[in-house]
Image (cartoon, rainbow, N blue to C red; front, side, top):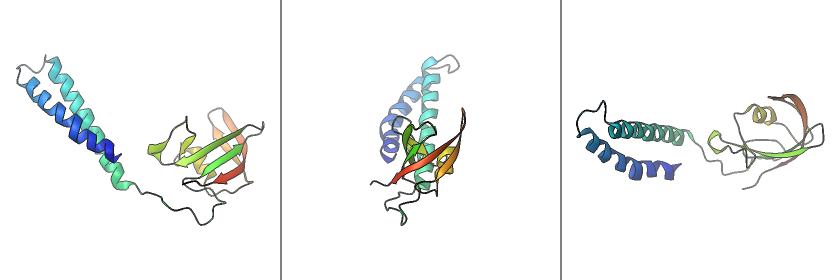
Length: 144
């Protein structure tokens, strides 16, 4: 996030501001497509800068493992087995790190909230868009 924020400031914003100024100098702004485009582009960059700045102020890096590694906390890899015997693995991560392809679920998601504090062998009822299902926790691990 820090790198992306720095890139927004140093590269993208520094390129867009002069282009916006040049487009504004061309005259009538109401029909100036370049001006309208650059203005929208600058607004989007500024929105991302505000978002990243705010998120970076609130973020905490978790660099130690929990004392009780049998319980599910932030950063845990959790293997679940559903009623049909299908196993799936998820990692509980921050909202900015979610990735369905990697199996990373947000700590704010209903599934993660249902799993937090549970231990190996617990059965948990999850509310899914397709209905509720009961899963068993078959593995909990923490990796750096």
